[in-house]
Image 1 (cartoon, rainbow, N blue to C red):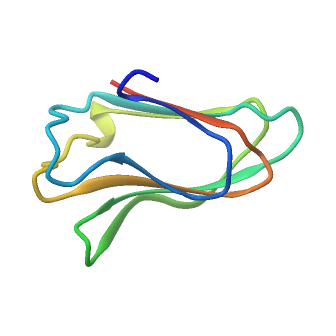
Image 2: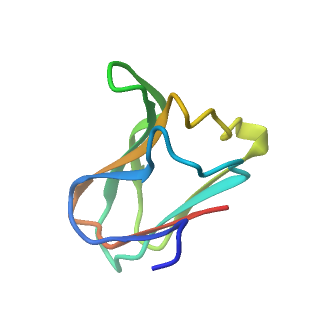
Length: 100
């Protein structure tokens, strides 16, 4: 799958952009619940291996809906010191993620 595109099919923590990576500028993040009837719970956060700073925590994403963050939500960060992670919980999977 192309870098910046993720198809998450299980309740897990996924490293979307690794710390010490070379990702560059993030303009937007879209997360979509592809399930027909089940809710998924999401945590999207920056992690420095010691602390987590959350864009959102325990966000309930309903079937067929999306959450969209862009530069107005300050999604860019220095990935030489921070990684971007997504934790999924519940049965509302799969979830797709697009990072641009």
